[in-house]
Image (tube, rainbow, N blue to C red; front, side, top):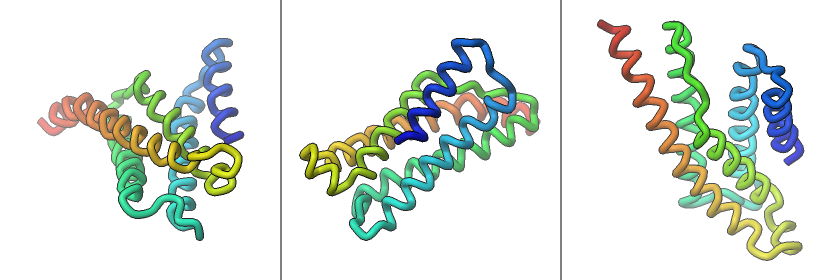
Amino acid sequence: MIASVTDFFDGYLARAWNQQSNIGRMLDPIADKLLVSVCLLLLAADVERTIAGWSLWAAIIILCREVLVSGLREYLAGLKVSVPVTRIAKWKTTFQMIAIGLLLAGPAGDKVIPYTTSCGIVLLWVAAALTMYTGYDYFRAGLKHVVEAER
């Protein structure tokens, strides 16, 4: 949770103070993907089986999209094509981080605030839906450049 909050403020303050850099634009999405991926894998493997059954598909959707979009970005970077992060993609990351935070609280969180884990699972599916949408959006935008490059 602390990593998610500091990630948000890092980006917010960099934009507010006009302190953005090329390396920051490159590293921020990588850090987001690593944070989300590691947490999803740990939640799927934990003893409590926080992410199990059908909910594993939400995690798989998220992980697959992250790998595919990273590959697309890498390919497009070779073509000198920049793929800016969209507002909906920022919302996707926000939903992922909140869902993961709730799921990390797990059964202990349920004792403090009932249905914490259930809310986390619902938000994980919302994040998966946004993930599919943004993945489609990136591939639709990137496919034009891929087709042009292959001509």
